Image (cartoon, rainbow, N blue to C red; front, side, top):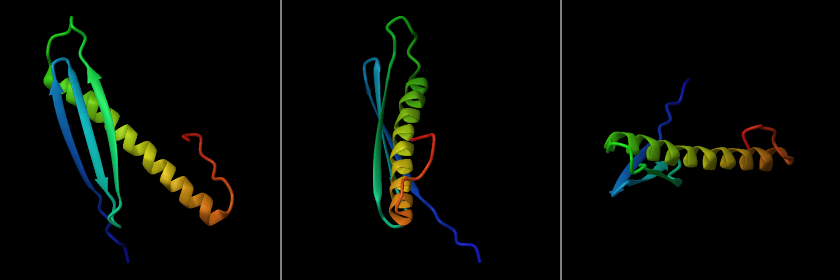
Amino acid sequence: MKTLVGWHIEMEFKEDGDRTRAAAMVRLGDGTEYRGHGNANRHRSDEPQLLVGEEIAGARALMDLASQLLQKAHTEIDDAAGRPSRDIVR
């Protein structure tokens, strides 16, 4: 029997001149929440492109979340195994 598991992810953006900030939140199946943040800055010589700033800031916020989730998983593996886990991503 397969179990369907889902995570709820929210992403918000704030624009301030040439700067875009992103905040991401993931809610895991057990209700635990993690938050990540990312920024993007448009160079003054670049044309304004709202979506590009959101994509870059959003990607950085998701990378922040990914790092936190990897660390959480490694901590759980370490605790269960009683020794450090191995992963080149750490």
